[in-house]
Length: 385
Image (tube, rainbow, N blue to C red):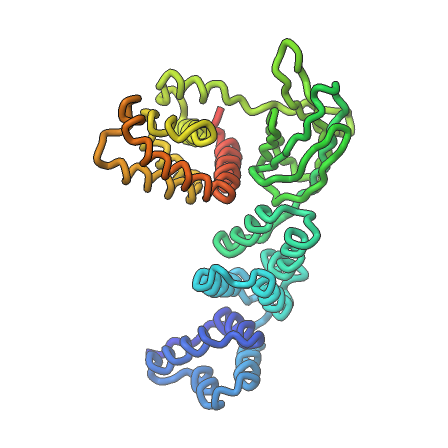
């Protein structure tokens, strides 16, 4: 059967050959030599130049020039490119990310599409994102990983949004620094009277969170958001961080995200009163609180199995594996455990306490980001009230 290489496949192979990445091209050419009968003119030409890469690039380029530029499906070419990049990354997850992003840059540069089209533009700028995260510390490392994974797995570019968040001076008893997160990614630390400046990928909404409060900001297409925050309460009421958006008409108070109904549903064992996404977030939040307080609390919980499913749903892979491993290790008893069982199995539980301490440095930020992104996604779909 004669099956000619498409112009999009030719463009993809040319880009990789130009950058010395030949394995997939060689494999495709070998398969075509076996499959095509008779051989297409292109396959014949590519196979008779003795593996000379420059000549193969020239042949592919001549073939591509037979098609008007506007008729080439740039998205299809990009899909081929992203698939091979993802395969290379998954085969070597410990690869040098700086070098990998430079390969991405070079491929985008050689396409000539990076000036005007996404996601080619993001691909071209990937080394800049790497440098901004790991060298200049303008964006967080988690933010870079989000851009990188979105590119490889969702095959989309990214649109960065700039945030400047200022903290108003408060009373002396409220002067403690506040860590601030935007959609689960740490943006910095807010000192009293200071400010944080960061860039995050554009989203439908932004979940702003500090040690003492949170707020939701819905995206309106701006490239820059200026916010202020200040502590309220602190004597008869517990202190709470409140957020305000600066607009042309003055400051607008942002609405905090209410978690009270989720907490109540867990405490009263009435999860069925929540929507499915609310149940998922409530269970993840309960897991978070339990893991911070004491491992015993997870083993006491009537929702231990549902917590594992919720962690899977939001994509908190490290803690999901940890919890499922723990459930498996207690397969000889019925969960949840009683007070007497907890005490009788103290040594076994302590092993998991130590294991959690070892993974918490990476698992906790992953869980925070996963919960925030899940919240934002389902807020946009109006599945969270």
